[in-house]
Length: 420
Image 1 (cartoon, rainbow, N blue to C red):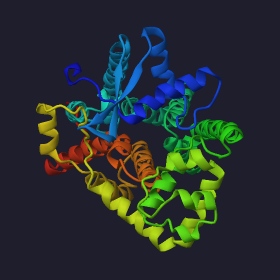
Image 2 (cartoon, rainbow, N blue to C red):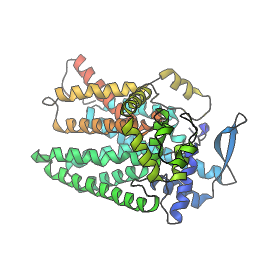
Image 3 (cartoon, rainbow, N blue to C red):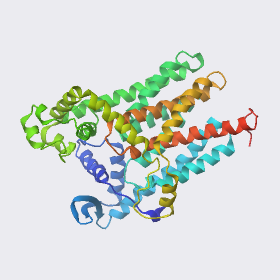
Image 4 (cartoon, helix red, strand yellow):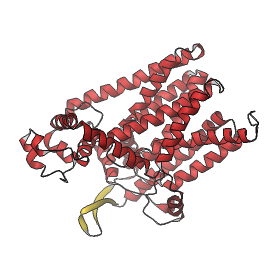
């Protein structure tokens, strides 16, 4: 695994910059604190990372970040090592989740091995980005939340609360997690045996949401925008530009209009927000979306189509290897995952009387989290759908394991649970 090295993106540097902002007592405009604290603590112990810009194929307009300095590689490889360790621990809980759902030791072991190989192939653990730890934390959250509902243990409720808070402040797009648990908890209040555990999780979900609102309030005081970061606003601008909705004649602000030369302007959303302030840009994009509703809806459909044809497994170590060949051969698209989710909506409805309540709750949680992630990504991101939908991959594997085991039992005409 380590022979694949590591992968830096332009976003990688921003997490180290965010650590510096936090050390100075400031909220970073682009990054929430969890991942910056992780990489920053490693950097503080092992040495400073120095970033430099290198042009791609001699083109100055296209660059990527590289690291330099005597301690830089040690820090980066330590981050990669930590991500691998956390991933390997998460495999145990992935297996337990599969076992809880399928009641098949053989099927659970098989899907765990396949999941491990798939993630190693993807190269996600080698990226200095939030994806690796987000994948692992999603598994930890799902396991503890399901256990908190089915067993009603206070310890599992606290653990689910911790991982929910961890994920939300790892990546703000995960705000759908406490919203999903709150919705499910409210539904479970109508079932007597789950009422107590549902109440505990409702309280925990409210606490997470309140914590996010307090963070947004503090963020607004600094950047004049009620949000955990400015990334969502930057994405809104980029989506409007990609959707060709920015009409110069409709921009009332003279300073912004003169800076955007035409509909194909290369000026980035981040630069526009930096130059003119979040409030002015937010007002601009809101008016653009309101006056171009048809184009706005068309852009959503286009992003959905783009997302379905993107690869589920991203190989991005930029090295030719057996892993990259396997990934190219598999060609697993996110569209397959969406099709499986839609299939399970029908199956859960059909199984509502034939499967135990615990298993149905388990499946409903997976569906809620998966569909919510799809909605957030399609509505809030202009591109990079493969990377942003990676959190759905372990959930998809669990559904495939459940379907495969049940299909095999049906073919054998033996409805009894396996004891192998």
